[in-house]
Length: 221
Image (cartoon, rainbow, N blue to C red; front, top):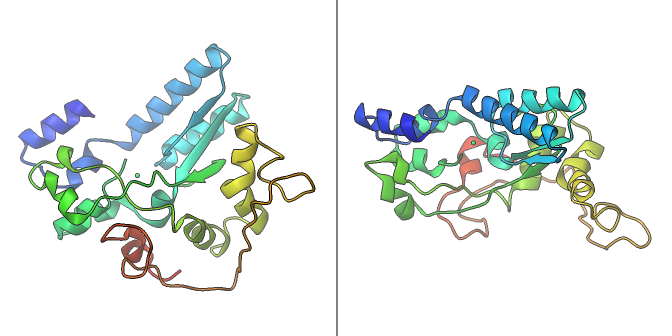
């Protein structure tokens, strides 16, 4: 990635699109495969965060079918937005989506929430390698997973509970204290209205940032 970034800057590619171009999908897939092989060789479970591409997700699915003890986590940004925003004609818009951003047999969802304002992102105005990594996600994660998963028929409500709660509790050995509604389990309960609607907007969200990537990527949720 560092070498690719240097090459792109030398070619005069300085905008946010350089971030995506310097990180080809096949590179993520190769790195994921290598991590799976190494973890399997030493008998250590592997948890891969921020799975951003279908190719990397396919590698994890293949290894799990082969008996490897590996798990994958995607983030809300890769479900609710696409890489096309890196090429937006508005620099501020493109930079707002700057994160290291699925489908496939993934076990959990996270956010990698790390918000930067437009002025902070502008540190990389003339050099994409200096744009701070990170986007919003934690406040809208549940809504994005429901909209892109359940509402679009890609998962049922039980699977929704699994990828947002139960699976993580099991993987990190805190189940059934967490991730389950039962006598003796922690009363960390979310009451979810599947029929409710809302509009995601930077004007109304609670995050300390002046942009919301989901307002542009999928505004009606």
